[in-house]
Image (cartoon, helix red, strand yellow):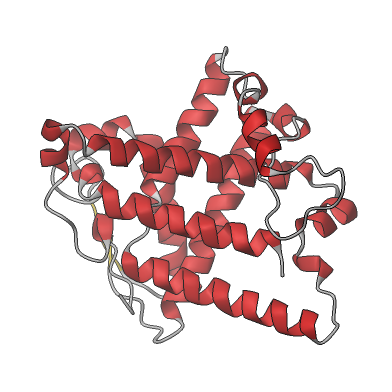
Length: 259
């Protein structure tokens, strides 16, 4: 089994938490403006997923108060439609995050920042949980937060994570997809077939794409901070009131089949 697949599943769980606690935060005009970079990018990603699956795009209201930035219809592909949409959206979210980091902070890939391993702990490995939390102290320097460009990169990825919060239906679709891949990985490993291509280590050794794991690790980390952020808002009565009422199973107007 691959640590990468497990981290993808945990990332989906964090995004579901964001979607659950975010409520209607991003349908207000003020918050749309504040978090506009991430909301606009997420709407573009969702539009691409809609075009790929034939899902209708119903309304586009970027700055209208009490309305979602983008409202979509139901995916016409039954049963596997939502997992396909989710696969496209999460893959594009990662690719956008990777592209942003490479364009704005290309040196970040050499920082060595990475999520800790879960299943495999080789002797002398530095990517343990303690090593990861220790590396968080060096993260501001690696992200060049003393510069405007560094802050802009982090702000864009943070708002993207906030806007990518998943509904319950989307989360279970993602879990269904990751569980299938994880189950298949376990089965073939039990049969003695090595799926090294599912390991981030294989990609790093084969293509030397250090930036992939560093950018993905940063995206997951910022998603966790976004979750803490929306949970904290619930402790502030005035803001919590503005975030209500709770949305349906498709926050921000998403209504893909299977929810």
